[in-house]
Image (cartoon, rainbow, N blue to C red; front, side, top):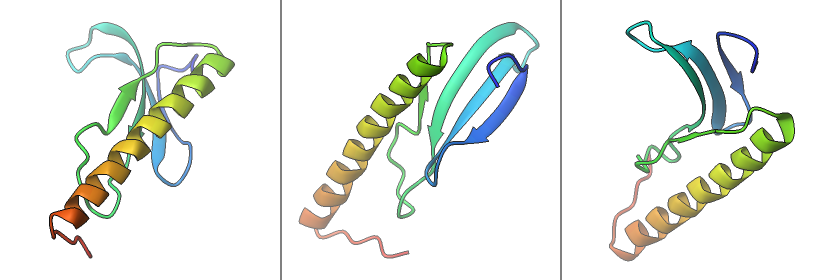
Length: 90
């Protein structure tokens, strides 16, 4: 995937790894992002994180850190919502 121009790979049930080498206006870029799905239909405001590494172990480490950070945000938001009397039961 790293050597491809564009691509998407589903990492797990909540995230995908996205790769592209051209911007929307045709400029050369080197973009790799982990993007997260909404959980419980709640927008957590940080659904994607740039991945700087281009080697396997570095990418895995960055994906691990991004996933931990995202899930901590999810946990905090859901707990805050509960404490404030908001229930999202969609």
